[in-house]
Image (cartoon, rainbow, N blue to C red; front, side, top):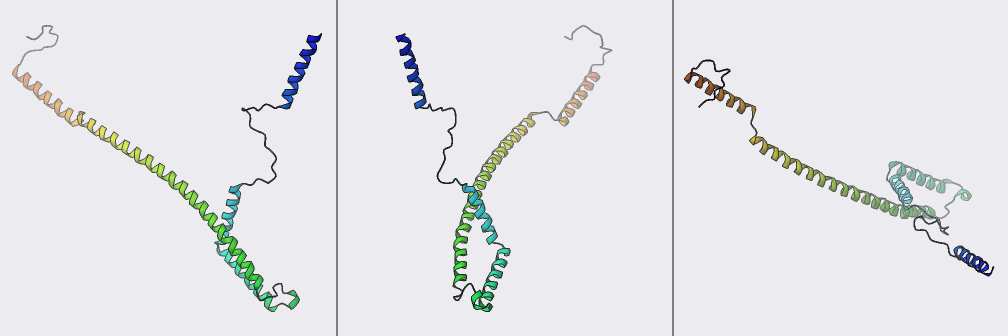
Length: 191
């Protein structure tokens, strides 16, 4: 009875240890922990900045910006006093334009840097492709040279014809020199 109690206590202690210290499994990915700061995708920000930079470089942006400035100036010159939103001589317009310029420049630089990175990757891929093409061309050149050398040793059709014609002439000459009868069916070897 006492032995059973000690075994039960030991089992209980092992269960408590298992509950207290969770085992870390290396074959499973960790669970994601909650973060205080929101996560963001740096590529999404880069894509957005490229879209803005592209828009800033279009004629449509220049037209809208020109219309906005013209309306702003005309409104603040000809509108009645209480309806003017830039009471001082266009200080708010200057502030808005300088803010736009201060945000446009870094966005344009970011877009250019991303484009430079893409160009660098494309250039590296092109360089590797060119190296493979050059290696393939050199291999084919060596193979063609080997084939040409091999063809130099191969009998051509014209050479075989000329050899056969020479052989026929030689056989006719022998027939003329040795006019013998019908030699078919003879079993006696020549001596």
